[in-house]
Length: 430
Ligand code: GDP
Ligand code: IMO
Ligand code: MG
Image (tube, rainbow, N blue to C red; front, side, top):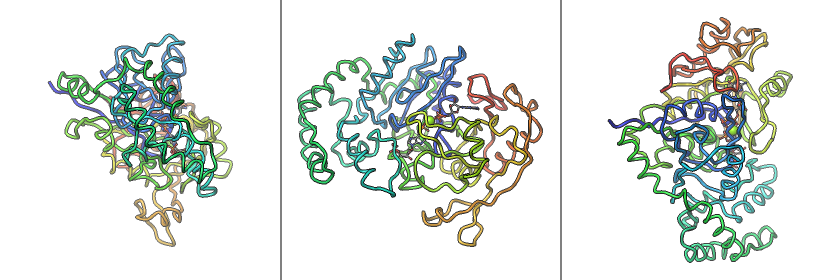
């Protein structure tokens, strides 16, 4: 029987806890595929033996025995970072021998990292607040058709030729516009050919492998990085990443057709966080914000930057449900909200004196949006031990039910702690 593909995405601005949820499902799926982004992602997974892992490029399924992790064609790969991640896991006794890397995925090159940094500096107060990993420039080159792909590592002649061509232009930009040093073609070719030797065993035609896996009755989980509001089309442009984290991107970035996708799981935090610049209507600048950041340990997994923190935004949640076709929501970090007398939920915005219930059409309007709150009563109990919905305090149940009705998708799982077991399961996900 042909089995389905399941997509898992972030519903807000990232760091919703996607890594934990992917890991939770790892035991029930044959393949976990990353389909976009690069090492701008930071996915934290805590395995049942209490080991903590921060994954950047490797799909979270790498931690589950028997699961095949796949890096799809839509990902941009910094090979040095990937090799370091593989070696880091090996040191901790975990093998990546099943890993498959798409021959069509693009490579992050030294000029991408250099340009990411200088362009941000050049933008000054208009900067995006990128992770500085070269993500935007790598996707830019991909779309401009001057990118270098994983398969080019297998053909040294082609690698050199493509690099010579692209650096002819990029070096002019680095030197003449940004006053940086030119990048030496020979040194880069030598460096990347060494990576080629390490990565060669993993390189595969992943869309063929995944197509066959589905035909053979395997279940495939497509793990998104970043999130809906960071999507280059559907997010808060230009304060976005350069790929398509939304569910539609899963097809493009893996080669799995839309007709195979049976379910879209949206991971959403019980409040909101954002790293980097850009509009954020429910952002808190008071003691409540400090409290949530502290209890929720809101520091970036990749850059260590403090995350901006705010109340739950149901306009964003509803938007994510619509754009991704979310069938199941996983509300994470409910435990962080324990101990607040009142828990506000943003149910709409006021934009220039007008009440709106949906994401405004223009960026200007979104910048002007101020939240309209509904105040729910809080709860004091520690919820970390709750495993069924009835174990949650009544006010916590009401909070989850309100999220459900405002967002328009059922809440199937509620996270009550970072560990794999720390969940309230209302409806099994797979
Ligand atoms: P991702 O990028 O979406 O995978 O999320 P990150 O790993 O960057 O950030 C989520 C953080 O929240 C991690 O430190 C997780 O260990 C933690 N986490 C996930 N779910 C829960 C939860 O239900 N409760 C608590 N307290 N922490 C959680
Ligand atoms: P995960 O997968 C949160 C943000 C950056 C910046 C913007 C563009 O862990 O949820 P980029 O380097 O991608 O060009 O930066 O996107 N950003 C993230 N924020 N979580 C992430 O990943 C992010 N990846 C990128 O902070 O605002
Ligand atoms: Mg993260």
